Image 1 (cartoon, rainbow, N blue to C red):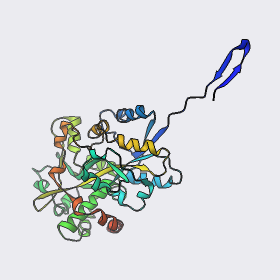
Image 2 (cartoon, rainbow, N blue to C red):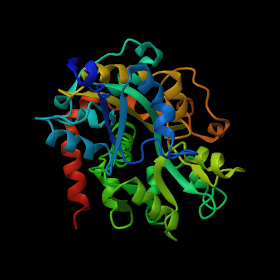
Image 3 (spheres, rainbow, N blue to C red):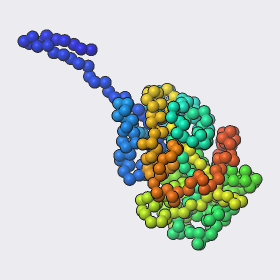
Image 4 (cartoon, rainbow, N blue to C red):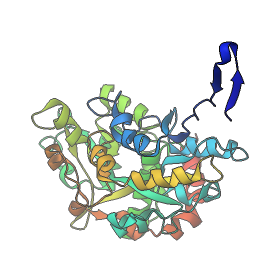
Length: 359
């Protein structure tokens, strides 16, 4: 509204409305999202500043002190009055858990054709979440304390090898209830035993139960592995050697040991997605943000800041990624364990895991 007032000496004063505030797009994600690069303090502006300028909006990346499972819990608590517009980090296992899709609105961005269909199929063909990045969950080892020269089994590592107390006592993984790589490791073991070895998957966990170190999350597992004098094998990501070379040069100080069976190496592919929060404050901006995150600007920053692979096709990777484990080098265990089978059995598998782990 414009108000005209006749003041002293006939001067007309004009009162203009205050400028409209820029809307804020709220993005919930996990604590380590895109913070493992050269300059984590500027990554948000480098990745999403273009979106802010294009649509005259503020983007607030809320890195919650939790992993993706904790974010889902937060969204559930806020579901009657959502705060977030977007969630980033729900992966191809978490999306299958009961109630998760109830918190999201399906959306298929118009530029989804830049993403290989295999990632869409692996993550969510119903488009409640859109692929953002992907990585291979596998075992890594400290080359200084446990090398193939000392332990040739590392070149073709099997779960039978890992059942040996020497290896089981050196292995650190994560709680599958609290950690996405921990859940991927559990599904790796289940798939190998049930689909390849045709044996009961619980046998291995019973054998290693008194030796294996199961930490709450990836950060805790990494610390136990890095600082623990007897912990030499970690359930992590196949990009870890690339990280080592990128920051420290030379040869990587970590090796990769994907699970071996009958002439092939196997790994679990984790695809992380981004979704539109159901009844979020800014749904149209949220849709534009998901579309924006598939452009080359954002996707080209993923590899050396989140240490995952971009899902956009034909993005150039840093030369350090020659040391990473690539999908072409392994067979994907996801292809042996259908999404429907995971959805139908996941809670039962987790209950059985708890039963074995509880003294």
